Image (cartoon, rainbow, N blue to C red; front, side, top):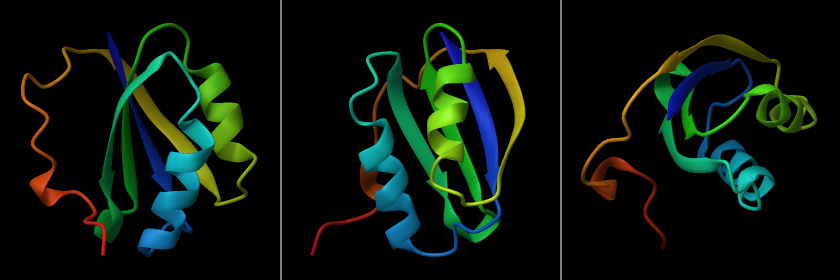
Length: 87
């Protein structure tokens, strides 16, 4: 498992988060997404190479930058309480 961290310069509200979620939802290699909108950070837990994921995010033209990719374990419990809530 790998974790790639992106800085998304134009991600400043939940609508950009939703755009990214929709763009990556069909990717089998994407296992979990973590959004930190206030710091404009996106964490992607994935298998395989990050290049395909990076290209897809780039297509959204949100001024993204891949900061790093490292080997990582996915968090054990998916506590989504801090994630976006549906209205």
